Length: 107
Image (cartoon, rainbow, N blue to C red; front, side):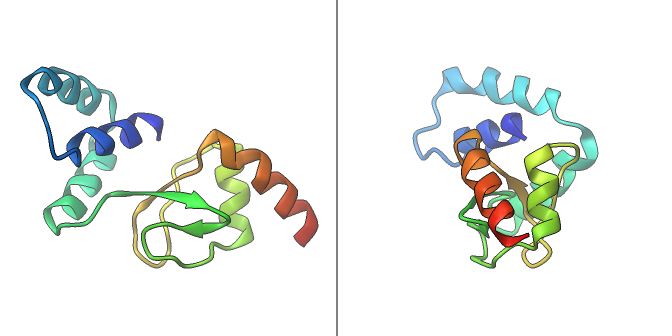
């Protein structure tokens, strides 16, 4: 997911320079084809394909995420999609510690 997050950051930067083109190609080569296809499909619709999770909320649609999704993100075992907006979810390392405390409080 970090690779996808970096790709999206570069692609949505309004000042894409010629020197970033090789980096974009390298990042796209690292991402599995099905994930990249879904990401591109959302991009073609004018949407970002990846949403950062902040305070147990999808930054794409602002919906609160279920506890099971948060646990899955915390363990980083598989890619997760938001059930509402269908964006890939990315939980930054800084949010992992906060998420761990919040999950313990809910259970």
